[in-house]
Length: 270
Image 1 (cartoon, rainbow, N blue to C red):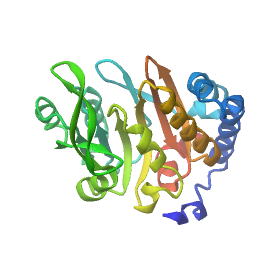
Image 2: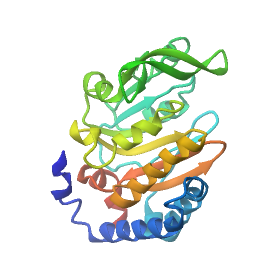
Image 3: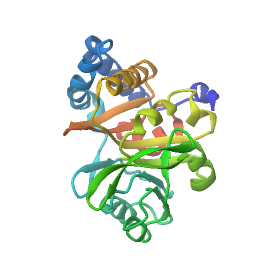
Image 4: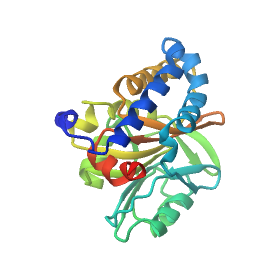
């Protein structure tokens, strides 16, 4: 997958210009926050929303897909090709996945992992394949924050690493929509999606991502700063939506891989 940078992203010049405009905007808005974790954590929401509104990326049509307590986002394709949707962390809420199943092309495939079998298994069964795992960076036994009896509690449990999950269980190389709300492991998984990192090494392409980035102590804010600096430097992903409760919720898209660009985003710049 290292060869990705040599592939022509798209022949669509207007898209390439819009992508460049967005990258410059995002980099400029966050230029003063790049060495200070608290500043980055604070300003990223404004930069995300301003750069979507103030650049031609505002032409990319986002559809809100509502869960019980939050909005996920999806950019639909005019292609009838089936999609692949992967969820990490169901949390007894499959409203967004049901909506996607109703509206995505026939034959679209759905996969989800959540370590709490009770409730999640039966909820997800009509949608797609459910796996009773905690998914993280590595296969080991470690602590996970899980929803039990209506409360989030820290529980020691086996984790499966995300690359094994994708290559052995999902077995799809292109993930159209990745819904990640697994209470912490996002801090380790997002760096794995950088250029040349583990996702690339295993041929896994992710086109659209909804992720919650959970409440950050000083250590996590440092990790977050590093993630954001990589995103700004590489220009692979464009952040389209950001809103904060106690956590940050982001929707971002892959503007580097030709499969994602041609299937989803170039059409808004015809």
